[in-house]
Amino acid sequence: MSRLAGRTALVTGGASGFGAGIVRKFVAEGATVLIADLDLNGAEALASALGSGAAAFAVDVADGASVAALAALLQRTSQVPDILVNNAGIGHAPQPLAELSEDAFDRLFAVNAKSVYLTARNFVPLMRARGRGAILNIASTAGISPRPGLTWYNASKGWMITATRSMAVELAPFGIRVNALNPVAGETPLLATFMGGDTPENRARFLATIPLGRFSTPDDIGNAACFLCSDEAALITGVALEVDGGRCI
Image (cartoon, rainbow, N blue to C red):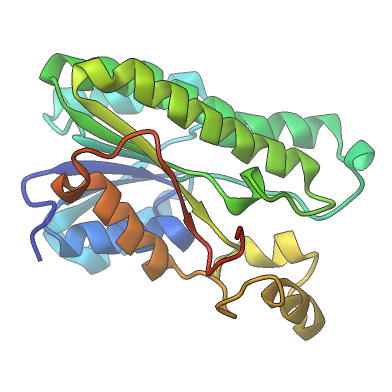
């Protein structure tokens, strides 16, 4: 279990949900993982459980000063990441597209889209200086097969998929690969939000759209993330891989 041995990985939103699944898998595969989250207590608890292979940091991925401060700290402490996973994200409850408040819209795009710009602005120059790196953006099936009532969330994930492809083309000459994952709805704290409430009826309705008949799990996403960030995927860049049980077929 050493596919990521010798690598340092930064995972945003790594304290819970898909992020925690990625963190656990990366540590198990030999990486040193930097868990960056707005929930510092949660990040510290996970890092403590995983031992010396993980460390916790506070960051607001939607705030330029916060991301810049994290990058400066990691430079000073010789913890510049070889792998960057842009996992932090938020959603909104199903509702007519004209009813989402402007403040909620701004926050949604700040966390789901602007954060990718901010981490790129701060960490891509460091990767370019090394001549290597892997960036993974956690998008969603919502970006390619949108569900009604989630228009602005769908749009934010579609933005991320397009950004991934453009970043991949631009950064390839510098030895930096950029890919994305498109998870189907998963067993994470955001599931109830997307379904408009975690009820047996809503679960049945969502599961009926997934041919393999189950939601994604943090382990599913961790396994796929590990592959795309490892040398096994050395010739793969610009891909948005569905981890969706067949939802997007």
